[in-house]
Amino acid sequence: MKICIFGAGAIGGHLAARYVRGGADVSVVARGAYLEAIRANGLTVAAPDACFHARVRASADPAELGPQDAVIVTVKAPALPAVAATIAPLLGPETPVVFAMNGIPWFYFDFHGGRLDGHVLARLDPGGALRRAIGPRRALAGVVYSACTVLEPGQIGVEHDRNRIVLGEPDNRRSARAEALAEPLRRGGFRVDVTDRMRDAIWEKLFLNLASGPLAVLAQSAPAGYARKPGVAEAIRGIVAEAMGIARALGCSPASDVETQIARAATMTHKPSILQDLELGRPMEVDGIFAATLDLARLAGVATPMLDLLIALLKTRARVAGLYA
Image (cartoon, rainbow, N blue to C red):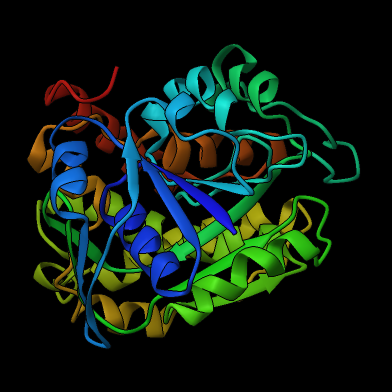
């Protein structure tokens, strides 16, 4: 199976190496120092379950890689316009595209049913570039749980062995193409679940992102540095309760164990990716995770005073840093 990973950061590099380990024919789209390092030395993953090396084809130009059996997009939301502009050479007539990213996917309401079926989230796909280049029928969601960090280009450190991705179709089918994508990744040592409740899976990860990202940025600390402070546990409960209200108003029934989430936060030394972006001076992934959640709240008619405050402060901090327009 020919699989292209579009983006070779922490998640993309980790998935690419696991797919190689599982027997897939893997290529990556990468740029700059990442491209040079991967071409010269391949990918190295240091994880609790294994340390291993993988060789992949790497290029900055998708046309050099050609049509694929599947593409997995792992870039952050600010890079999606570049994906839309360059992905065409990777796509055969039936090539699926998995968006393995945090936040709300641009195709969230496609095949949704009800009054919002087909509603376009313009914030997440400015000008409809992704819709034209890829289209919702190719798209799958990939909800990733993997605390990993780029130690240096081409070298990925993985914090724990709870590495998991949930694959789901927008129309909630358990599809053959999702299962085909799952098998080599499972052989590579990654847990893969194929769900018929894609949107529930998105919200379950979103609860974690919403409760950790803004607080981590404002505290400029991994959760372990602030989670035991007075009032923080109650703030997390409020954030998750508001997010759950949006999800339910949109017809979803995600699972949530907020007390376990609070307990884990107190021991979490891995910095959320949006805090890593701030510290490294990279464009911050504000819209896809945070602003889009408020867009959904407005569509659903759900009041979110806690999220409104935290996301306003997050946007202000990102703008002060020059990392969000």
